[in-house]
Image 1: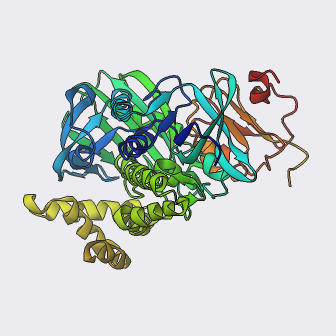
Image 2 (image 1 turned 180 degrees about the vertical axis):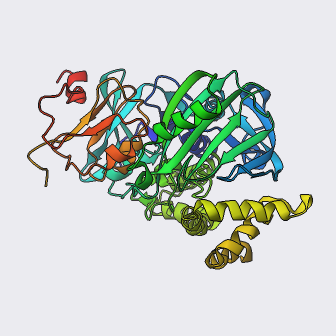
Image 3 (image 1 turned 90 degrees about the vertical axis):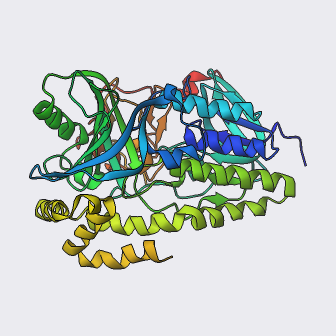
Length: 389
Length: 83
């Protein structure tokens, strides 16, 4: 075998990439992580909310990357009524630019080399086999050789396509998202707010996630099928003008969230996909930080095992372990998402009213879900699948 | 097959480089770097998925073609590197 510069190259230094790199290096592999932007963690493309339980599997919660600690959801129906279930175990609104940086540091502490402003523009091939990546590093062409490539290159992933995997997200499953960080507004610092209905975000939802007492991420996502008729930014402007006419806008960002099942192929030859690139996103919530990190962890571990087995075929184990851990659940959530996104405003109002009739202690997300089932009995089979196994 | 007439136009300077368009492009026809974006023209089939996906309305569809419109740097890899 010819010389390789690294055992594993990770493309992309978001949460999934950093976690993959960290666990691959912890498994003894020589790892390089490449990031196309000049900074890890910037620009932020995210609503930034995670659960305490999810994030603590990987990193000890630290005030320096926590903008707000949250304890409750508030779900607001189209008619303005709202229910406020508890968030079991609590959660956080992150400062992603610091959070991502800390995750990259954890990887670096395991021995991962990190290069920023390194754009991967193709896979490197030799005798028809993939042997690394072609990059532009600070505008210089550099080829880097590795035995395995882990693609953590996000919603805009192309590495998987070049390796022969279909990573294109169907437009019905891609959520087109816009968000503003607003200051000078009144927010409940411990509540994650969600708004539903045709006026705010047909088939999707709008979020207000607090970052302190007077600042919040206000954003929304809607299926590209819906965005055909009216864009995310138009919906967002309307909501903000109506609800927060005097707010100061600190940042505005766009984004895409693949609310789909996991890609049918996430391993091919010596290339694996993790995170958004693999569509490892909870299709109901659109949350992808923790599930991407779980995908990254499994991918990194399996890749290191493959290096030491000397058997690239061992990478197939990644697909099995991912589906056993979370993938199967996302498949079920995907069906639930399809049912929920079809609810009209009347159904949403009815669900909210049914939930409000529940006693305080029963007013959990599960309780609201049961209320939703009364309105859409066909969902019962899908829900049963989640809870039975 | 690529169509003779390009009808998709990415408005220069308006893009937020979020990648939503790249995620739905079935032809791998969009090149996105840190703060550069361009259509790979000979791959584009004018399917319009990127137009619908763009949260910021940065990508436009022009039935009459886009030859007369100001372009993004068309082949930035070639431009960035001296061959």
